[in-house]
Amino acid sequence: MIEDAARSFMTIVEAVQKMNEEIEKISAATEEISASAEEVSASVTDIASLAEVASEQTGQTSAAMEGQMATVQEINAVANDLSNEAIDLQEMIQQFKI
Image (cartoon, rainbow, N blue to C red; front, top):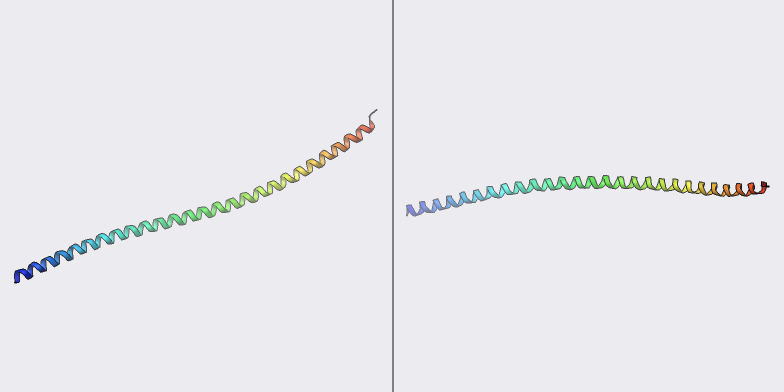
């Protein structure tokens, strides 16, 4: 009877040790998952930051292009005015030809 109790106790001790080992493995795996999650979170934060910078730069590029377009339109208007004046001058010169 004492031997049976001792064997049962040893079986319980071994089972507890195995459970402790499994708990340690699970704990280590949980720490690895947590570290990986933190890395993923940091990467997502970096990507979000880069996306924000890209968005700002796109806005700046768009604004610069709008400014250039306005300048080109002004140059085009001036060129049209000069062309009209050149035509007027040619007509005036035609009047003075002998």
